[in-house]
Image (cartoon, rainbow, N blue to C red):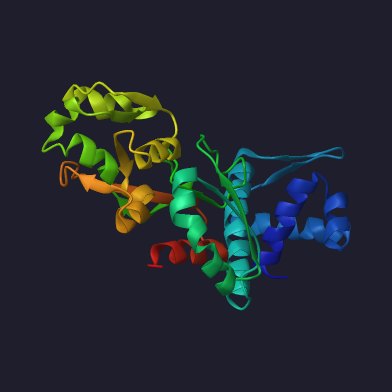
Length: 283
């Protein structure tokens, strides 16, 4: 019997709580289970279990050893699963929670291409603006949502964007084009309620309208109701087709990262790595 088998037996004994339950699960006799544990203790020169007729109790050293071995065994099983995945076409569910504006602008338009490449992967996408517990909710990937620094996840940049000021050609024809940020005070400015202070206070701008939804603000800007500030990815199609015009070019120089996070695993699921790689390649 190999050392690996003895470790598996040790873990099964702890999880089953008795030699008899472990023997049933493993399909071997109770004396065979007891012998493997005794041999493991002999090899380690420590007592792992305190035995009585009624129960098995881990010693302090045994508890530490069990926790360490359990982690190693989990890594071992993940490694085996990872190798098995390499020989298979990716399949199964991939659970994603994504900022809805990022999702509608950057993710949804590429799903046809993803489905062509990986038809057996079923994407389960939630578009939301909320705090996510990636481990508790068993989520595979979180995109464009804030996530605190923690060792339980891996963070990866997938896009880079910036803020842009925009207005419709009709508005600019009627009201003129501001030459600098100070001149915004003379214009109708449509503010996002969530960042009103950051957008307006530094320049002493009094907004003519406030909304709490970027798509609603976009519709107002397209109707010529004023100037607004957007993430570039949200308005890029409208800038390209001329429905909106960028003004005050260069006033917002800071580049902003859009990240994805996924749970840390020694061997990540292949479908998770494939989706991450897919998002970082140009469409």
